[in-house]
Length: 139
Length: 143
Image (cartoon, rainbow over all chains, first blue to last red; front, side, top):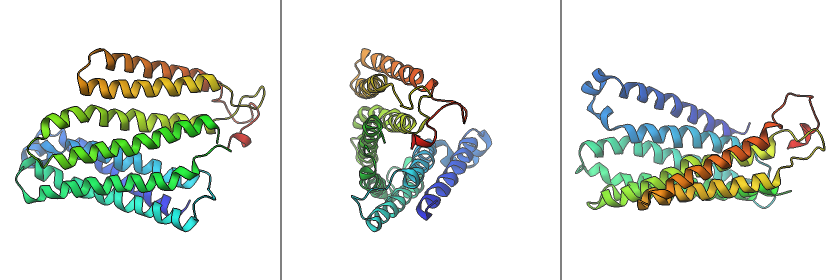
């Protein structure tokens, strides 16, 4: 398994465990009272599952298993793959850190990091598609 | 990779980028004062494109490609069924996504029915290709 796939899949596993732990914590009345952030953390929870876990796992397995293409130089393919990894996970982390804070205090200056998080995640998806598109082809 | 898998997987990739793009717009507009109406309209499409559009097209495309071939002739078969599943799944995704966002009451129902028929069509095709090692030809050729 190539290093990029290992990074994608292991990061996806961390997101999986973190998301389910958050899901459990959100159900605890005691914890919601002690940590008000848990009452607004639903979007972080669902995006950790859908983007961090599921999409990260798919990216890692696709990079590993899809047929190689001679239309894209291997070095460029690897650079796009690492860009996808870095952009998507940085965006997800930034979103996870800023969205609950913004939900609790809509005037916080931190809210201006949300568009950056959005652009990073979109950039990650675009880099992945640019890398994998030439490898999805009929024989 | 068979041509139908290429259609399904490339459709999934288009949904991935469009779905993330809609998500980015929604997230960016959270910091502006006129967000609720826009977000309420975009959210159903964003959710549908990513939960069913991205993941289901990808899953069906990879499954059609990689499941063992039929024992009888060593082919995957089912081209018409898979093409029909692709059309129905994507009509369903777009119907539900746009229907919920626009408030058209019938579109989500019709869309969900189309998605269900797509799932059934694919399942009927795939059923006979899910088999133990050594029960037929093609496991090695399925890549």
